[in-house]
Image 1 (cartoon, rainbow, N blue to C red):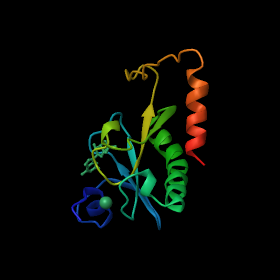
Image 2 (cartoon, rainbow, N blue to C red; image 1 turned 120 degrees about the horizontal axis):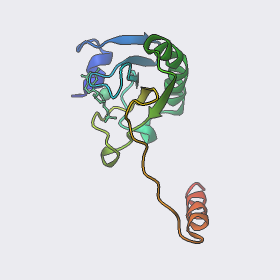
Image 3 (spheres, rainbow, N blue to C red; image 1 turned 90 degrees about the horizontal axis):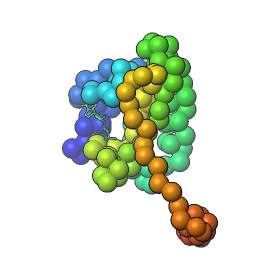
Length: 135
Ligand code: 5GP
Ligand code: ZN
C-alpha cells in the first residue's frame, strides 16, 4: 500500500521517533505547527477514526498521555492541543489515522477557531438528531 505512515512504521522512511510500543509509534511531525509537534500513529493501517479498532484508539490515547508530559518537559511548553483531522474536508492529508499533539505557549500566535451561535431551539433539535443517530 502506498501509505507514507505505513512506510515510516515499517522503517522504510526515516522519522524522528520519540516512542514506540506494540500498537503505536510517536514521532515528530516533519512540518511542525510548533516545536515538538508529535504524531501518534497506529502500526496497523486504518484510514480514519471510524475504521480504527477501539483498542487501537485506546492505545493511541494512552501513548498521547504518556508522551505529552515528556514533550512539554523537553520543549518547555506549558500546554498543548490535541487534534485529529478526520477526513479530507477536515484537512486530513495522510490517510492513515493519527492524533496530533501540538505544544502551546502564551503568545505563540496560533489563533483559536471562530465560534458560531445557534438560533432558538436549534441546538436542542440537533442534539436530539445526534442522539437518535446513535441508536
Ligand atoms: P493530516 O493533515 O493528515 O492530519 O496531517 C499529516 C501530518 O503529517 C502533517 O502535519 C505533515 O506535516 C506530516 N507529515 C507528512 N509527511 C510526513 C513525513 O514523511 N514524515 C513526518 N514526520 N511527518 C509527515
Ligand atoms: Zn498506512
